[in-house]
Image (cartoon, rainbow, N blue to C red; front, side, top):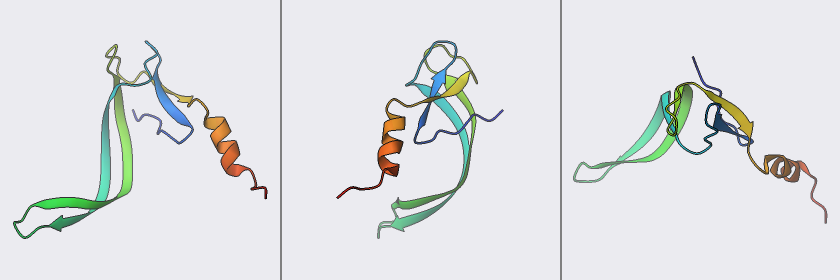
Length: 90
């Protein structure tokens, strides 16, 4: 079962205990990374492009519930969207 993806206006909430902040997430991602190697051969990821991503499961860290997560609105998300969509005055 896949879990609903987060957006700028939503966040996860455990339906059993109400947790909003601590989750263990299992996800599969397909990415392209730009690696920079120094002269000693040590690498550093300098750029990552996510080509696809699927959240497979989410476990609540508070009550250990698995796949009991719902999407809820973030506080102030409506105001932020309205402000971004409002025409500039001036």
